[in-house]
Image: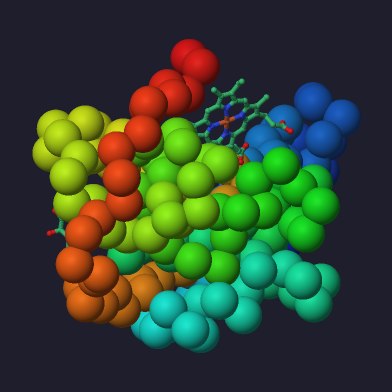
Length: 163
Ligand code: HEM
Ligand SMILES: *[C@@H]1O[C@H](CO)[C@@H](O)[C@H](O)[C@H]1NC(C)=O
């Protein structure tokens, strides 16, 4: 019965739009997103997260202040040869705020010394970007530790995301 309704829906859609899903190609019909919806959310340590950097051709994850997102569908950007490969397999919350990509100690979730409002705004908006993106999704949390070195990274000239 349900199968028949789905088939009829697909046929009608194809008849009217030459597409079986009424032109919709978003994440809700992506089988990988669907699978994630029904699998338990991950709870990783930072060293477990480090394995998901795509260097083995597998799943690529990045984290922003504890929230972990799957970005495997964009290997061009996040894979080993990608422009933003430096963001994966870790929680580099700080660099989403500062934009200081060339400074290696920015790749941390240590937000000390940064403006609280700027952190709030930039971190929330990048989390939202990955959460709502059609090809990326939230997969769980990474357990953060706060045993940082005595001093936070040196201040740097912040670079703003264009647009
Ligand atoms: C706070 C500063 C910045 C952050 C956190 C940031 C982060 C990112 C991220 C995460 C993406 C990938 C988006 C996706 O998955 O589709 C991206 C894409 C991109 N960014 Fe940045 N970015 C910053 C600044 C800049 C600046 C200053 C430029 C320009 C000079 C730039 C140029 C680009 C371009 C061209 C892309 C598209 C890459 C592509 O499609 O291959 N970004 N950025
Ligand atoms: C980062 O995560 C911590 C712990 O969950 C939270 O208290 C803090 O508000 C978050 N910061 C930002 C800027 O989102």
